[in-house]
Image (cartoon, rainbow, N blue to C red):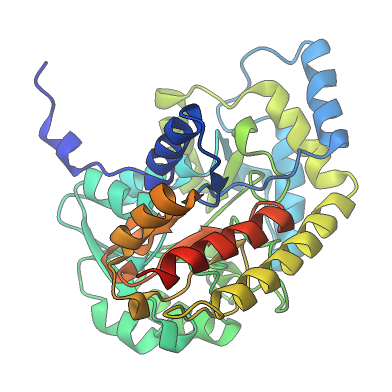
Length: 387
């Protein structure tokens, strides 16, 4: 079959490719320490699992409204209103299977061929992939180590043109662990409001923040009307396999996004939505425990990385990744990542998996046990010592 030309513009998420390579090595008898996949290694909280099981047994196995069941949309509206300090109506909420559909749908709904979209680089690779697939022009805003992987708002302003139709933000960020400060968000809001540019704010890691208070651009006065909040359950509640995410946006856009849901997925699985209600409204102690564990692992990884010759590692402010600069090793990001996988049995991702500005960096997820992280650090150090 002859593929459409648009398929040539579609990228991928390299983490799954590296996972496949690592699994192939394991099948050969190799011991691999998995630091490549961006998912918590914790089980979904038991109360959430029980809510899902109860929903299945209670007959929640049929279609739901395309935008999601009202009790879940109300719970999400209440959560966003409380945490972002803005009024939210359930009609502004669209529940989707995972977070990626909100990225895809927002681009399809807002961007024409030739429009420009500003996105973080290094950043989640699906941003660039979906921008290109939608026919828009991907305009990267570099996130630099010397800026603590924050946002250079002056540089962002210089990238805005009359063709800019969307700005994508991600804070806390994957892969850097960087955070956009409230002051920076206020300045981005000025730029967006002056030109009427919508902002897609990916806040999937908002509960995995170590020291600062979370800030959303939607909380800036006047910005709720032109912000699409992307959030979900995968990271906060260790529910990656449940496929449950959502967007919060102006009502009219929510109606259009719901049409895209009708045309693509029909709806999100009913029983997972019931579990989502329990996740939001039930006990939150599991989230606190997971964050405390991630904090310990973060400190272990940062200290260990900075002891390895050629590595320079900042302390991430959120999420569960370290993103050390490895230029001092003399190898490219991909060459070092390959060497670590095949010689050390440590699966990690080259910084270039997250865009061209990721060259010189490696991403390690610390969603693994402290014992395995310590072992991985020793293996990485041994490989680097032989360079």
